[in-house]
Image (tube, rainbow, N blue to C red; front, side, top):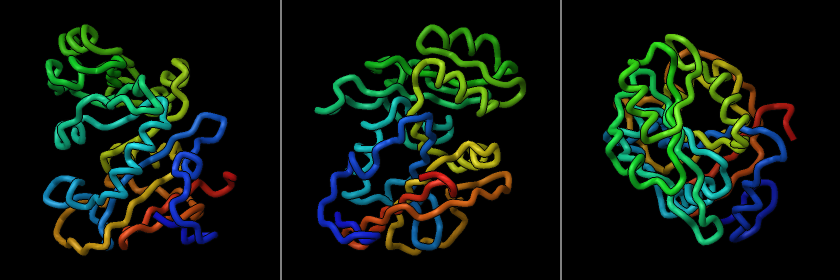
Length: 232
């Protein structure tokens, strides 16, 4: 990997390049095709690359908590985050779900070294909430839908202030609409997809002014880091 903005540096220190600021921070990490598709045949793996997978691991290793929507967890077959040489205790996965339609007997819950978190709302089925509480920490935020500001506040109260969100597009759109996105790490795959794939934000329209803070490149794949305008 090499930095192409603002300085040309081969093999930059990714942990340093993507270090979190010393305050609560929400980072989105997504991959898209050159024409903006967020997946290929329903999955993000077809858009990924060796460098993207390496950065994926680094970003997870830097985070206090990894947030993902239930649809993404199901489609991508999520398991728990894996220990790393520099992070033997992995961060928890926090699953956002209104209906609690999760496989509570799956590896994400049974194999997690750090207890999985379920973020839901008060109107979620009571029996499913009780079942989830047996295998996960449950955060109730909002009434008929998840209140993301309240959910983030609850994560922060647990000391989980370095937040990495891995989507999906509907979760991203809600976070952006609520003004909660501080940073976007976007991998741009040199591939044209077309068709009906969603963009990385898919839902309520909103505008979050961003500035380009960094671009890395490897094998034609761009790794762009945008931060909210006004942030250093």
